[in-house]
Amino acid sequence: MKKFKMKNLMFVSALLALVVFTSCKKEAVESNLASEIGAETHQIMLNEAGFERIVTSPLNTAYDEDYYSSGVIEYRLDGEVLATVDFGAGDTEEDAALFQNGKKTMIKKKKGTKGIKGKKGKKGKKDDYKKVIVDPIVKTNNCAYIVSGIIKYYDIDNGDWLATVDFGDGTCDTLATKYYPVNGGIDSTTFHVGLY
Image (cartoon, rainbow, N blue to C red; front, top):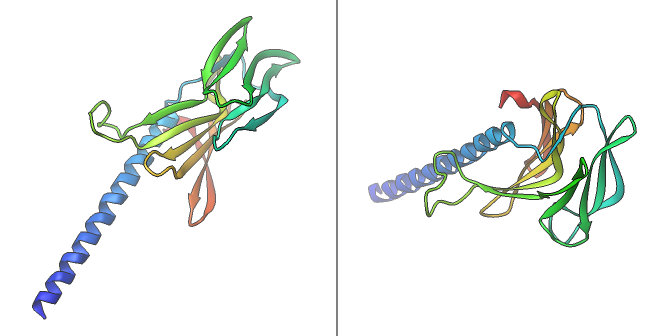
């Protein structure tokens, strides 16, 4: 009987250790995501917030990708086109063309992966998540925060969706909305980007 209790105690201890390890990794991933959201770099810089984001050609995704593979978005203020993003003609290219101030530059749709803080650069360490930029990240000269854009985050190991962050409609309000899975459904929370 003592042997049976000892085996049960060892099994329960191992199970608890696994739960604690998994919980710690999840918290580290969530913490890393929070700091990533607050430090996100822009892809488009405009002079003023309050612009309109207008889809001039339908936005579509190809295959199993979450980023746009075709379509065009224009950013306008008082009727003037400030920037245009062309996502292509339906291919799975990982770059989109940005036309702004008479110049064409390429912007990334996928931003790669990130590791848990403190493990960056160490060989053999796995990354925690993959970042897909669905809608370009926009900042303005008259606002300290990101004012527009959508990013989806996925677990790098199993491909599970972790969260989607929507930075808004071009208004300088410091707010973003995070969507995340909860018990088979989706929940959301609005937060101040500056607090991360």
